[in-house]
Image 1 (tube, rainbow, N blue to C red):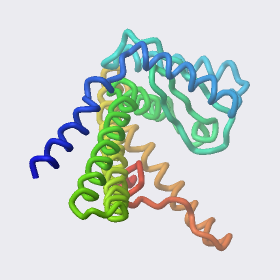
Image 2 (cartoon, rainbow, N blue to C red):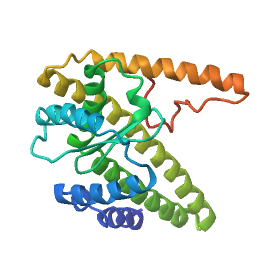
Image 3 (cartoon, helix red, strand yellow):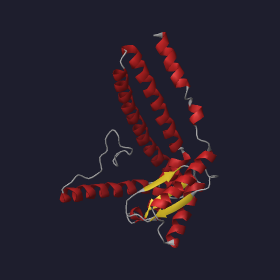
Image 4 (cartoon, one colour):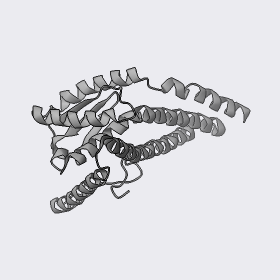
Length: 239
């Protein structure tokens, strides 16, 4: 028992959380690299007036956020998909396909505020820490199981099970982050003079789009990719 405890302490000691924390400069460096990769795969939507409008709304929100000193980059992507996302270091993306569903500037602000909140709350860094923590715990459990049974197979199975549980934990934390981004984003909207209820209106539009996707998928004879189970990174729109 003492040997097992020492081994567990040693394994966990190999990866202190403080060593995994991402500095702001590292966030910016990673964000810039990801920006290059994203634009190499998805072109920028060629509409300078729309790009300037999105940037103006985005920067208004960013100045009212909890990280107003960070330089933000807002990009409209030439994709019909209904999506928006953010990467570390101040990079926010919105697809032209999602913009078509928005009915007001406040709804655009709601989408951008949600993504800005992912950045201000350092969700990428926190998710990375969670992922690495679960990996170390998985390794420790696998080794301990092998020692306890003398079977490498049992240890491998235990490690796989722990990895699966770790994945669920990380994805579950992701769902909490989405709700946090809604909450903080609504706060940034209020500070900027936008009606935070527009956040609810956008979620209503997304719910309608999801219902439409289900109907369309049934008509085409297949299931819509809208499952919100244990491994989903987003909560249900109702939630």
